[in-house]
Length: 117
Image 1 (cartoon, rainbow, N blue to C red):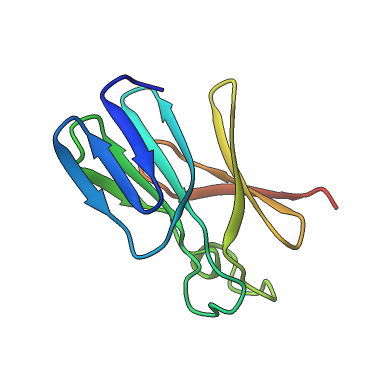
Image 2 (cartoon, one colour):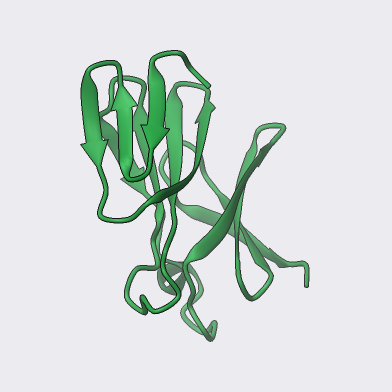
């Protein structure tokens, strides 16, 4: 992790600048010139679905992930993301249903989907 970036519970720090979330941080990935944050969504939360956010290295928000319902309106059972993966130059996130979504690092749009369950 970048030495300028640290996190604990629901707080993300960029040096002296802090970003607070309503939910606990599950995963942080520092890649290229951005910091990608996956928030932990409680099981009884049926509202929070777009739980991936990106910031630049100064703590300015770049984007929130595109809603899955916007990209795939006919998909059933929209769920929050559970895992975040960065392999090679590809960012992906999966949900509890075993669906893997590929995310554009520059703007947070969903560029594809695969199932692996």
